[in-house]
Image (cartoon, rainbow, N blue to C red; front, side, top):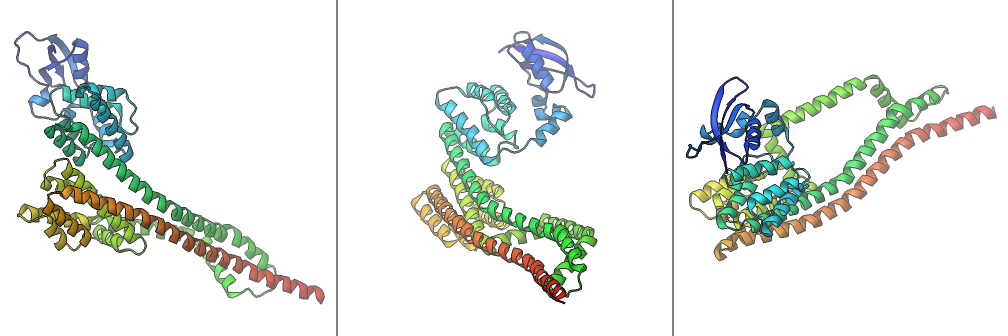
Length: 428
């Protein structure tokens, strides 16, 4: 590929000189402008001229450091793709490579393929990096918002073993399984969340709008209101008069909870509570243990060393109790212990996992044991979610019936008294 030497200025006015490879002068100008530089001159390099890399590469500086501030901010604010979007992107790339396309050609095709959640600029930058001589794993490591450490290390393992297509397909299946689990958990929580919001809305509407109108009606008659009605009317009057105080209390509670959950000790206590909570605790445990087994098993199956796989798995996990247990396990494995020993000593992981990992170590198939565990936990999670949904539905229906029944009772009781009062007055 032809080489071009150039002179350009940075936004600060500093003069830079360098050389780069490009198909033609127009492509060279485009590359220079991509670096956030203002080109002064671009000329074809003489034969035998030293092939200097871009100034950022020659100085050991990331190319992104030369990008304009607006471009760097837009890159930082780019949203992280969803698991299903990442799975679709990985599947497309694996299919192109499996068809016999060279990597640079496949990445060029990915620019034109529609990948929801992953901009075409990502594939374009990957192609440029690979064309410049970088490995795909190193190019992906430069885009951490899109490609996690798990993704990068698995691609690196695939490059080293010469089985990149197989690794990409396993990764796509891995992300799809995680996306399926997440969708099941989300679907199980949607119904109780909607019913709870509906219940709060009904109570608020009744207390703020309906009850004050009934109060005006009852106050025009000389009747003694039942105790539940007087209590409800008193509560409604307080809410109407001091609603701002209630709003302040809610805001203060939210702020205090956020501060508590953002602190290390508070976040750890919440994570421990999530694993031990009634009803939801079992679902959380099955989800966490399945995620741990699936992630670690997939990494080991694709040739990632055990210590590296444990470190990546620790980063993937969100529960701090599990993260601490994995960190201690990694330290113990570094000291020469087997994987099953520190897992058992942590008192966090279930005995089934410890036993199967020990059997996997004895048979030389730890990845297979972990993947079998993941399948087991994901199957149990599916059953637990169905049971949880079936249990929550009648509980919420009964709670809504009690609340609505109490509100109706508080209104109907004085109505009976009012009818009785009107009847007695008419009789006289």
